[in-house]
Amino acid sequence: MKIAFAGGPASGKTETLYGIRRRLNVEHIKDVVFLPEVATSFLTNQPKIVKVLNKEILLDYYIFRTEIHVETIVESYNPELVIICDRGISDVYAFLPQKTANKVVGNYTKKVLNNYDLVLFFENDTTGRNWFSDNKTRTHMSLRKIQKLNEATKRAWCEHNKNIVLIPQFSSIDEKIVYVANIINSYLERNIFLI
Image (tube, rainbow, N blue to C red; front, side, top):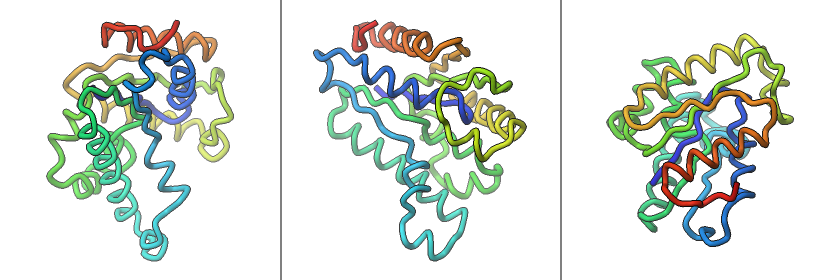
C-alpha cells in the first residue's frame, strides 16, 4: 500500500506528515514507513557528479530515479507495509516542462501514473494567510510562483487514475492532521493513527 502526499509548495504536506507520524498507533509502528521528500534531500546533499556537471535534467533524472528506487526497495522489503511518501514521482510533471519531464521519465510513464494506491492532494492556500510552518518556500518564492506551481502540481497529479482525495485548507494544522489521519484510517480500514 503506497500513499502519496501531493500538493504545491507551502500546502502543509510535510508538516501534516510529521503530525500524523506523532499519532502513529504503537501497535502499528512496524506496519508504516514514512519516506521523506527525495528532491529536498538531493537539493540539500547533491551527488558530486550533479554539482560538477550542473545540469538541471541530470539532477531531475537523479531525483526521479532515486524516488522510484527507494519506493521499490521499501515495497519489495515487505509488500504489506504502508508506505507514506512526502511528494512522489508524478511531481516531475509539475516542476519541469512537458518535453523535459518526458525525457526524465523515459519508459516509466505508466509506472508514474499508476504508482500510488491513494493520493492525498493538499490544496494550497494561495493567499498565503494560512501557511502553518516556517516553510522556506515562503522566503524564496513569490506568491504568484507558488500559485502557478500549485496549479501545475494539481494538473500533474490529476493524471493519477486511482484514488485522489483533495485535502482542503484548515484554520489549524491540528485540524488538518486529524482530517488526514481519519482519511488514511478509513481507507486502510484500521486505526493506524490515533485520533
